[in-house]
Length: 412
Image 1 (cartoon, rainbow, N blue to C red):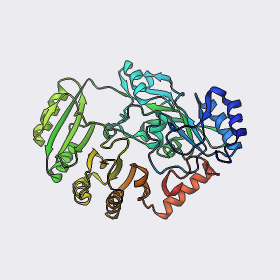
Image 2 (cartoon, rainbow, N blue to C red):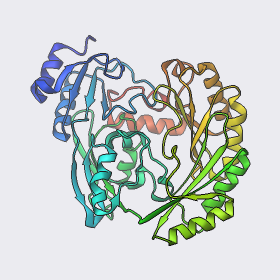
Image 3 (cartoon, rainbow, N blue to C red):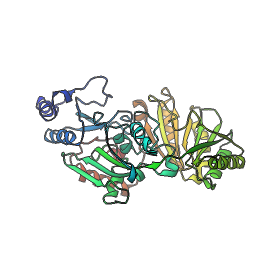
Image 4 (tube, helix red, strand yellow):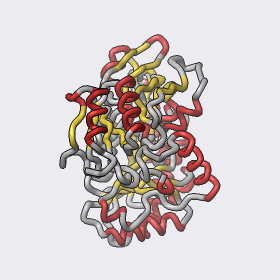
């Protein structure tokens, strides 16, 4: 057990949370090197745990379901895993205001089950069924519907965060028009747990449409796939999402989703399908909204302007060489995910990532085996100015760098 994680720290956590909430780490605890696990049921207990952590200089990584705990760079010298999965509750569904308030450990799927009773949805469709509020905000992970409804940053209107010293902070509010602290909501989104422990969130909701249709077209040509996506994106059908899928060595399938009133939606879909030479179906493809990589494989997120999708798809195909790369993602927004099997050559993955970055494309490793992470920086280079700003922000929110140390850009 590391020197800092002393019996005194364990006893202090037990005194603050109760013996049932604190235990020694074991082999099933995600393998990030920590010695203690503390489970908390909400903001008050999270603050109590973080105060103890500050007193005993413990380095802390927060988690919900743990589905994305291995995303980003591996955190360094972790002492305490703060488990927020017991903080699982939809606190309030204000249907009239189109907002929902939930604790950080609440699965997004559970929120949608709750709000669907009012004909509403939280349009953060998730590739991982167990994904929770805190983890989704921390990783800024959105699904296909981001095309129309926006990403996590756009839907998050209020947040409660416990800072490294145990201070409880709030930003935003409980009504859509309240924008006080909105920039702080954006700041925490995508911070990978390095600025604070997210404990509660308030999201804006949207009505669920009466009817959905999907328009699909399949082609072996990257240029034709990009052209089909552009046609859907510029159409007056107002697509909810535009996705692409290409299994390793297979053809491209472009799929657009439209929604609205019965019959009118189907008519719009037929018009759009005729324009791109595609088909209309009443269910999404089996691959829709899922990552192209397995939990033990390598996943990259690459991006360019939507107008640059033809070049990016072609570059991935050319640069991958013998690597069996699967491609899937929001071609209408210019954000794609690449998937490679767990046994792929780490050196070849590093070479592919480096070449994509050399082209000027955005390319980060979402998750990868340790052997791959040893061969390539998951975040890649960043300009000195933005990196200095990020480091100053880290210094302000976590002066001792005890929150998820090393997990984010530039070793933050």
